[in-house]
Length: 118
Image (cartoon, rainbow, N blue to C red):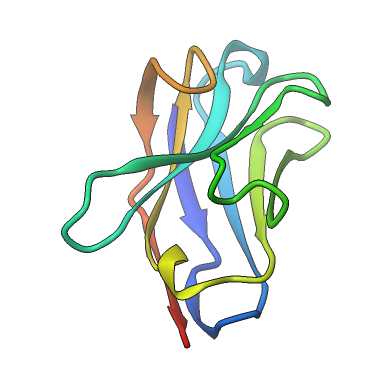
């Protein structure tokens, strides 16, 4: 699966931002789409994931209630809508495709930078 992210940028704390990830190269019902992030000096961490069906969304506790993951009607584009952003949300955000919501990811995008200033 090939993945291309877009939508990163620099915002102020409390602002919103939406990331997009366009997928190609495999039937969309064959993979879960997820978002991960990596802050400077830290390991990459799981943020959110969406399966094929509505209602199969998963979130890290740190973003639950603020971030929303979704997939378009064709299931080939994933979105991460981020509300009430905090400085600790700063990092490089990666889109990924895999077998399960929290593990088994086999394809990764190039990453997009999100910077939240206080």
